[in-house]
Image 1 (cartoon, helix red, strand yellow):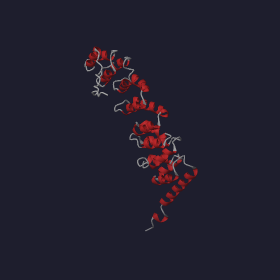
Image 2 (cartoon, rainbow, N blue to C red):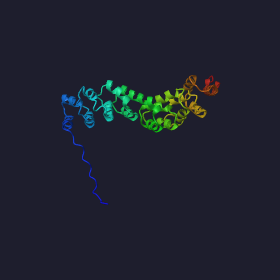
Image 3 (spheres, one colour):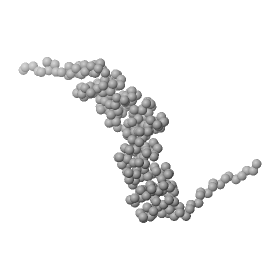
Image 4 (tube, rainbow, N blue to C red):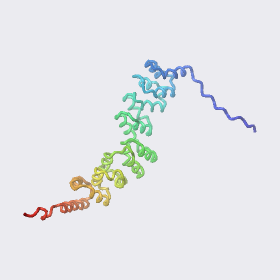
Length: 270
């Protein structure tokens, strides 16, 4: 059997004259030239992406590009258009429905993404969570933006909840809001009770004392941490069992008796 020489890499396909011309024009500084390039049916995916890599695009260019069917079949181009700062909202918002979950995550995390676009991206992710695999939900819990991490606090899997609690974008407000949700799973409540960051926050402790799923040992511990007036107000709006609340009200009475001045403290006549 003959030993042949190593196969040489096949040469890249030769560009057509139209492509060569467009390749030079995508770097033009003329708005009219760029608008012509965006609408040209000979525009390729690579050239469209090179165009979208520019941040100085003239007004109307994105609209012209979106009308160019030859490039808008490309997922990378759709993704780049949705994320471009010059893309008008009426174009970007509908495009979000065509992005994959992790592409949406990148839109939501992109610095400078307008608030309404970020919220729409997050809502799109949350709506799809039931169709997302366990491993993907775990990755989202670790890396996604605030609202997505907050939604995953209600996940049926404990490991996803634990990862969401450690998400760097999660805020105390969302922890408290989720604790006030009657559908909050036991795994979430237990996770907050044990969490080194969240369990020491007063607002979180108050929310835990309003949640009927908080373990008794932690109820007693957090009750000791709160000032009397805070504990009293918290218990008025608590879903804890009647017997537990009764015990805590007795604890409050004992505190009051302990702190009450004794008769001898009023002083004696001189």
